[in-house]
Image 1: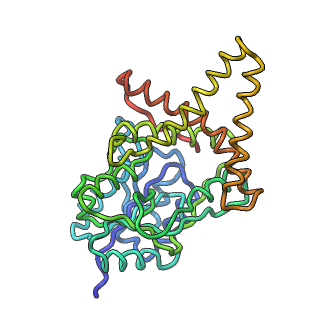
Image 2: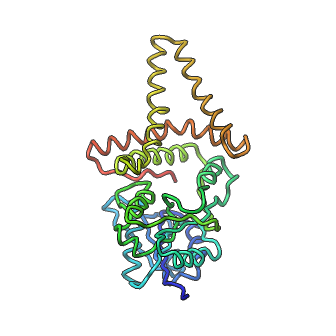
Length: 326
């Protein structure tokens, strides 16, 4: 079986050395690689050109999103290499590990019903900060057929074209949203138990984690708005949890504090109890589980802020702006 024609689309914004490492990890595919830059103020474009990849700078008169960047890179790649069969999307803060692209492409070749395949993603420095640890835990997902992929995945060109790619206006959650449309067309999404990439979150501050979590809350709200109806119920449960823990319980506590202070104090105890429940029900050792549980619990406030931000944008008829955390 001949190896299919593979193209690479890398997206980035001020990734610095991480982008160089990313491009170098794809040394076998540089001739068929397009790097899409979203108004970087470092030397990203120059670095990419020196390494021999095709480059594309987004017109920043329009709000930029990862979805828009990937779509633009895909279009540019097909313009240069129209016979491309599979496209590997890569975030500029990731390093592709040995043989992943070949393994993934072979898998798609052998399974024509599958549109997208992804593999194991790990943090480069999971123990550097607690926020990196949280990212490393977040990347873990079951193997086999799944509902969605992340931003780093190999996709069949014909399938991508069939659903018109990513929804460019989404500031986050564009990959699961596209996978919903793919599955509605009869395609399958797969996650392989094969090492795919190393990700470098470089999160060192609480504010970065908060903004990233708020962006997730925004994505939950927008995803539920688009595909919340049956049978998908996309991110409805996640949105409900954000409203419960991030809005209704705090509001009730505030009201009780004015009327029945003792009841307010008692209700406040649901948060440490929730932390304990999540910690004990986790598959990880208690130290790791308790850390993750703590941030899952307080993260509902950040997610709630993202939900409110979506409502203000949607019903205020404003153009959504990307929520950056780097």
